[in-house]
Length: 146
Image (cartoon, rainbow, N blue to C red):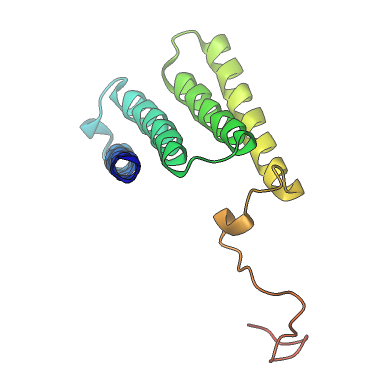
């Protein structure tokens, strides 16, 4: 049951991620051809993209069952996306700016936490960094450019 549920979570996160990419493509097409998305449609598709990727990421995390600190960080990131989405469609401009500022603060906090290595079990692999044995010298030498 655990493996089937795990696969279902992963599949659902990939499906939602794919829908997110589709919605984001529509937004970009609307940028290129503004008549394609009249009125608030552009903002709505942008907000949908942000909400879907936040939900997809939380489902992805659920499939991987991270420690509570990583869950907290994933929730923080999801809230950043939710606030950004709210900023896209909120009718009151002053409140929309507040949502935007909250999103910025949460994104900045998320990146800062990655930079300082919190939570300790978080891997920097999310930034595509290679992890290897740092005690082994580089065969090309310390001054090589790769």
